[in-house]
Image (cartoon, rainbow, N blue to C red; front, side, top):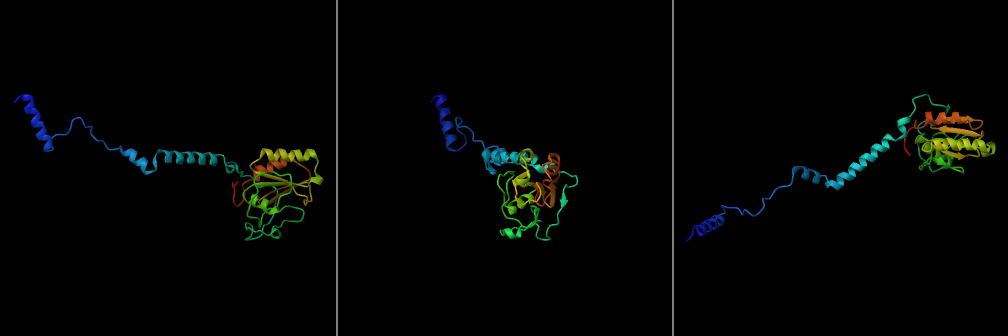
Length: 213
């Protein structure tokens, strides 16, 4: 028996006894520990989605109007609000009450707020008051007491503060222009642009639920 054949027989016997591994078979390697950690959180796709949501949240927080809340004294006349009922929701329009000739600036209001924007038709007081609760400023005007130039000024202000102002006609107003924020009112005999801009800058988001849009 040749030397080569003896060697082959010895190797077969050793394999039969489990003494020799097949050199051609690749060694099995476990997954890296870091991959198991990632998989435990749902994998790369889930982590990517979570990361995107975090980035979006940071962007929203940084762009939130609360970042520019004024610490100067509020403008306008303070209007006392009903104790214990200032933020109550109601569906009864009769419970939404302001002084005659003026929009309400707090108190019971409708459950649905108005989005900021320029409205060509009168809006419900109850919806607008809910927007005031969220920190918006409501600018109303009596169309019969306004000229086109004055209306243009109001629209410019509302456009420049597009995320913070509701502009709408209100035929029941006793003066041409009234700006309202939560608990505050500013009556104007005409569209005084500077006063309106100052009112918005200083009074926005100083309310029970600031920054909600």
